[in-house]
Length: 340
Image 1 (cartoon, one colour):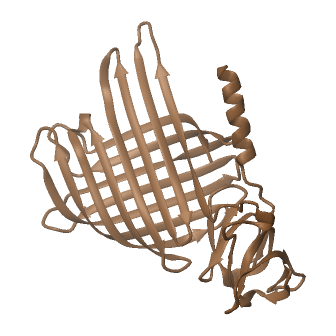
Image 2 (cartoon, rainbow, N blue to C red; image 1 turned 45 degrees about the vertical axis):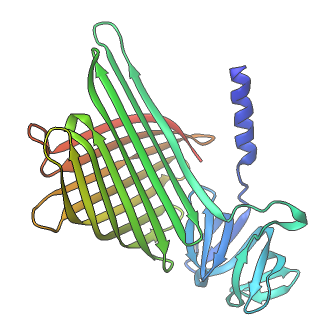
Image 3 (cartoon, rainbow, N blue to C red; image 1 turned 180 degrees about the vertical axis):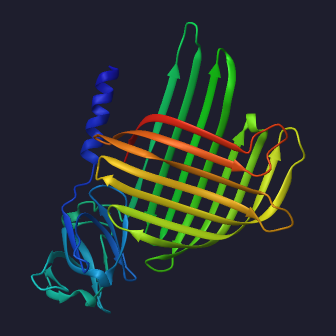
């Protein structure tokens, strides 16, 4: 019964996966296949076949071919439901119905509430992410049990992006607990242009063996989307915030800080090997020299059908830890998981 349930679940997931029949040609010569999501305010959201989401300046589009009917708005005219096909002339598109038009005359494209013939249209948002787990268990002369869970989600909805990551680790050696911690981070980005965004973020950490009951940090500032191609995505942000540190054995303290956050994703081998890096740093700007830095870096290997293996190293530095604790903690884990 369990096998049949898993098989049925897998079939449902496979049938729910989007098709990637759309194509866009850019001024720099790139020709991308994937799924058109939406275009408004001069920015087109595109979902590449390899996953994720791209924000493309509409002015950089040379030709566009969309497989499904969409609502197209020309200048100040009402939206019309039509097909969009690539034209043989750069900077133009063929509307059916509607005929040839200049891309500069198109001010918005969306799926609206439904596609052609009353069929449900693809979502105008792009949500990606995944979850993984790593478990180690030995018996005999060595008794070691370790569990590592992690997950992340990235939702791009028009000019808004929501990102969250979570990690939990629990280990025992010969029945003695050696690690118990969890971390959680969240981020909201509001794109002001194709490359500039406002950011608000929050970072939380609990680690019993570092004497940290709860470390929470909040910040707000501006960020730059430095690179956003199908293979390379680089962004960074900075601003000001507040850090609150609650300890188990020493007095709590808070401080005002400047923050820096960054994200890098590189498809080393498309659909097979991806390098990723995320970091969050807070530096005290009120009286004192407190600071902490968190990073997550690793390689993700595609196993097929959405399943992945991930080799990840987490690095956490605290300039002034509790007495008797070290400033730096490093965790390396190998997990298996699924990404969507």
